[in-house]
Length: 281
Length: 281
Image 1 (cartoon, chains in turn green, cyan):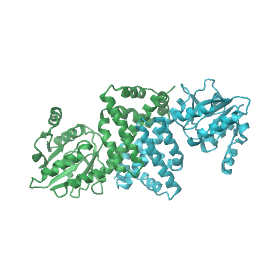
Image 2 (cartoon, one colour; image 1 turned 60 degrees about the vertical axis):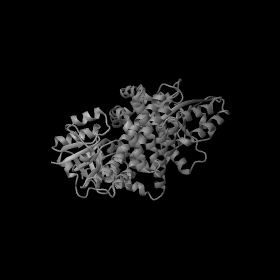
Image 3 (cartoon, rainbow over the protein chains, first blue to last red; image 1 turned 90 degrees about the vertical axis):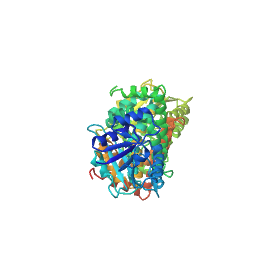
Image 4 (tube, rainbow over the protein chains, first blue to last red; image 1 turned 60 degrees about the horizontal axis):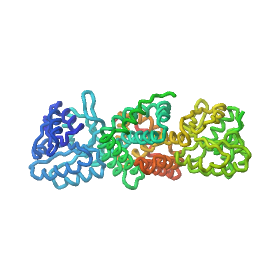
C-alpha cells in the first residue's frame, strides 16, 4: 500500500485520485488557496487535503495541473523538499513541452527531488475507461506503484522530455484537428458555405465528419485550458519550425471559443446548428 | 454538343478535358508557352490546343490552373474578349479565396466575359470516380453543359465567392489534417517520441491513423502546389482571424516537404518508415 499525492484536483486530477484510492492507495493532495468547490471535489474523490510537508512526504508525488502552473508546482515542491530528510519522487504529468519539462527538472536539481517525466493520453479515468500514463526517465521503476493501484502505465525509452514530446505530438494531432474543424466551419459560416461544407464532408470524408461532430461540442468547455497547451506545442516545435505558427493560430482559435463560452455562446450555437445538418441535398 | 475550353492541362485540367471529350464535347485548350510534355498530355487527353481567340470563343471556358495563376488567366481572357463579338462564359474552377475570386470577377467587369465561381472537390476524374464541380453565381445555368458532357456539377446558393469559400473550408480541413499529421510526426521524430506516437494513434484513434497513413505519402508530390493553396486559405480566413496563422504555418510545412522532395527526400523517408510502424509494443 503506497501513499500517493496528487497536486491538482481538477477533472483529471480528482479522477486520477479516485482511481488510486479505489485501487487501495492512500491519496493525499495539497490545495492551499484553492476554492471550496475544489476541496469538496477532492474529498468526494477520496483524496485527503493536507499540508505541503506531509504531501511531498508521500511515496510518489504527481503534478496534474494546467500547463501554465506546472513550473510553479515544481518550484514549490523543490523548495519544500529541502526541509525533508528523505528523497521525493516527483512525476510531472502535465501537457508541457520537453523544454519546459527540462526546466522542471532543472528547478529540482540539487534538491532531494527525483524528477520523472510523465504525460497522460486520454480523458479522466472513469468506470470501464483508462487513460494511459506514459513515463520516461524512470530508471528505478518508481511508477510501478501507479500500476499497482489501478492506473495504466506505459514506459517509454528516453530521458526527461520523451514522455512530454509524445503528449505534445499526440495532442497536436488530435486537438489540432478539432481546432482546424472549428476554424474552417466558422470561416464557412461567415461566407455562406457552411451547409454545403457539412454535406460534402459527411458524404466524402465521413470519418472526419464523425470525429468533428463529436469533438467540437466536447471542446467548448475545455477551450480555455487548450490555449496554454497549444502554446506549449508551438514551443515544442520550436521557432525554427514553421509549424509552430500553426499552434499559435490554434491558441487563438481556442481563446476565441473560450471567450464565446464566457459570453453569449453565439459561435458555439452556430457550430452546433451546423453539426446537426445531415447529408443529402 | 458543346465546345468547351479548358485553360490548364495539369493533372486535373487534362483529366477534366478527357472526361468532357469522352462525354462528347469538343475540347479546346490554350497552352501558349507551356512545355512539350504539357502539350502532349493535353493531346493524349483528347484536347485540341489552339489560339487564344478560338479558345475563348467556345461555349464555356474553364480555368483549371495553380491558384497563383488564376488571376493572370482571367486578365488574359478579359483582354482578349474585347476582340470578340460575343459573350464569353468563364468559370474559374481554382482553389482561390473568395476575395481573389472577386478580383477575378472585377477584372472581367466591363468586358463581354460573364464570370461563374467554381471549385473542384476531389481528385482528377478517372474511370469510376468523379470529383464534384461546385458552382455559384450561375443564374442562367450555363454549367448544365458540364453535366451534359459527363461532369458531376452541384449548384450552391450565393454569388461570386460561395463556391470558392466551400473549397477553402473543405481543403482547410482535409489538407490541413495532412499538414498537422506531417508537422507533429516530424516533431516526434526529432524528439525520439515517434514510435510511441504511431502506436498510440493506431490504438486510440485508428480513424486518424488510417487517414494519415494514406494522405501523408500521397502529399509529397503535391506539396509544392499546396503551399499557394494554404496561403489562399489564410487569406480566406482574413487577418482578423487568428486561424489564418494556422495556414501560414501549413504553407511552411508544405514548403519544407516540397524542398525535401526536390532534394534528398530525407523527411519523406523518415515519415514513410514511421507510418509503417504497426500497433503493439
